[in-house]
Length: 306
Image: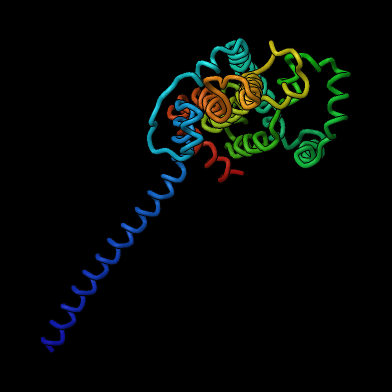
C-alpha cells in the first residue's frame, strides 16, 4: 500500500512538471504570436515615417525598409513651404474647438431631454433621430438645402450641419438614465431646476463618458475635409486635411511634369504623401497618451449601461 501511495505521489509530481513545461511552451508560442502581430501593426506607421524622410528614388528602389539609408527633409520642406499649411492648420484648430463645443452642448442637452420619460413625443422623436442614422436625403438635395440656407461658401458649413452624432447621444443618454433617480428628486426638493441638475449634478457624475466623446468629436473635427471639398472654393477657409490633399495633388502634378521630360524636382509622389500623413497625425498621437484612459473607461461604461 505504501508503494502504491509512493508511486501515485511520483506520478503526481511528474504530471505537475509536465504541466509546467506545457504552460511554459504555450506562453512562448503566445509571446511569439503577439510579437508578430505587434510588428504587423507597428511597421506601417514606422514605414510611413521612413518614407517621409528618404528621397523618392530610395523608396522606389526599396519600398520596405528597416532603416533609412539616406535622410532628407525636402519632403517636409515642400509641405511646410505651402502658403496653405499654416492658415489651414489654424482653421482646423478653430474648427476642432468650436465644432467640438457645439457638438457636446447639443449632445448633452438632447441626451438629457431623452432621460425624461414624461416628455411629450419622446419615443417619436427618438425614432426620427435613429431613422437619420440609416437614411439620408442624398448629396444633391443636401447641396440645395445648404445653398438655400446660405452655407455654401461659408466656413460654418463644416460646423452647423453636423451637430449631433446619434450614436454618441444615445450612449450618453443611457448613462444619464442609469443614475439613481433619488439624486434628481432630492435636488428638486432643494429647489434646483433642470439646468442646475444637469450641470451641477448629472454631468460631474458622467465625466468619463463626456471626456471620451469630447475626444471623438475633436478627432472627427480635426479630420474634416469632405464638407470643405464640396462646399468651399476659397482655400482661405480650408481645414488642414483639405489643404494637405491639395498639396499632395500639387506633388503629383510636379511628378507628372518631371516624367514628361523636365528636370526632376527634389520631392514628389509618395514621399510627400507620407510627410502629409505624419503632419496630420502627429498632433493626435502626441495627445493620445494623455487621453488614452478615457477611451477605455468611457466605452466600457457605454457598453455596460447601453
